[in-house]
Length: 232
Image 1 (spheres, rainbow, N blue to C red):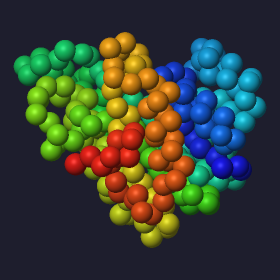
Image 2 (cartoon, one colour):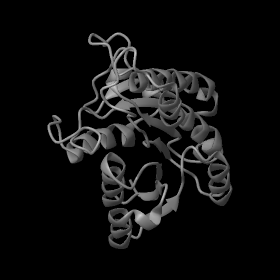
Image 3 (cartoon, rainbow, N blue to C red):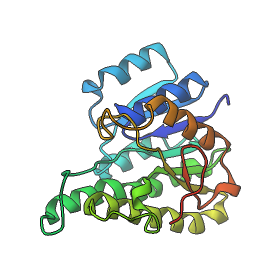
């Protein structure tokens, strides 16, 4: 699709970086956001290869910086606002060992920031043709799918952001804006580890296909990278 724009957070590595590369390869304009562009060597290299990738500084928990960036992009319609930035938090935390400070940090990045991003850029999304807000969530946030317990911090943050997305799908529908959650699968990234089931390229190719075709029919859905629905 030509002349379409996607804004991606956490675009300096892993899934975010691959999303930027694949959208650019399809001819999209990519607003690739990360906390520290100066240290994002691979993203900057991709920007040199693909001039349609614009690297922008954004810490998703710095809401003043987010508002400033929104003001700078006030006249840029954004077809897909893609909240990808996320953290897992301390690994191996079991019941009795949960640190509330670490939990708040995970909730800030994974749950609060995506809603703040939607609020900050809703006008740009509303001005676009596709009008889509998407959040990279996780199947571990599905309450119905939880059969193993544990992972309190990450699970709860993804369950909560799923509820955020569901609310957005109702609250923004009147403006023609669709909102959905995507599960990327267990991906071979720094977070997923080398033993994960699928490559970053395969995960992103699946999600990109869903994102580029998504509209009102997908509003409020929770989907795997292969298009399969996930129970809340």
